[in-house]
Amino acid sequence: MRKQIAAANWKMNLTFTEAKDLLDAVLNNDLELAPHQLAIFAVPFPYLLMAQEVIRGYNNYFIAAQNCYFQKSGAYTGEVSVSMLSSIGTSFVIIGHSERREYFNENHQMLANKINLCFDENLKPIFCCGEPLSVREAGIQNDYVETQLAESLFHLDGSKLQDFVIAYEPIWAIGTGKTASSDQAQEMHKHIRNVMSDKYGDDIAGSISILYGGSVKAANAAEIFGQQDVDGGLVGGASLVAGEFTAIIKSLK
Image (cartoon, rainbow, N blue to C red; front, side):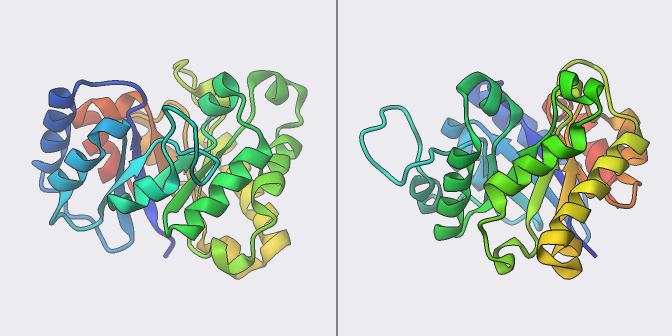
């Protein structure tokens, strides 16, 4: 079975003490994850080492960075390289979140460079894709997302994408309280899997975990995750509440 993943994206939230308390609160629920289930916490850079220490000894719990720079090293004040993340034992890194694309003008080539650097350092990317409201309303969301996938991933050999993780984010449903219906989520997730299958074959496409990211919360997680091609969620605001995120983890297939 494909990996089923509940990934918390804390974004730019929480003090150090609040972050540790939140991790402790989730872990204190003593959730027993099945071998195919993962819980991932994408924490701000200053909390990476602390978070890794807190989850030490817990099976199938991992820490992710929320971003990395698209160059290997150099005079880029304030940026964080993939090798830095790898050197402290970071497992995953989010690549191409819609907020990075929109606010920081990250383009397809920059994201392709980041993906390459991640593989060079044995970090696992969580690659984000998704359409804004204008594209959805125009009915061209499938082509839009396919272009995102093609421009940033299709240069890779298929072996790199075995057990890869993609997060589909309908941008119009991030932080707005709007949520794509479970049918809309399934429709796009199936499209993403078909796109990857057309390029790399059914075996590779069938191994890829595709997460839904758009106002996932405890109340709707089970319905969304229950769809055939939805393999969990990339969770924003609800991941900042221990009880909410715990319930979302419990909703994994």
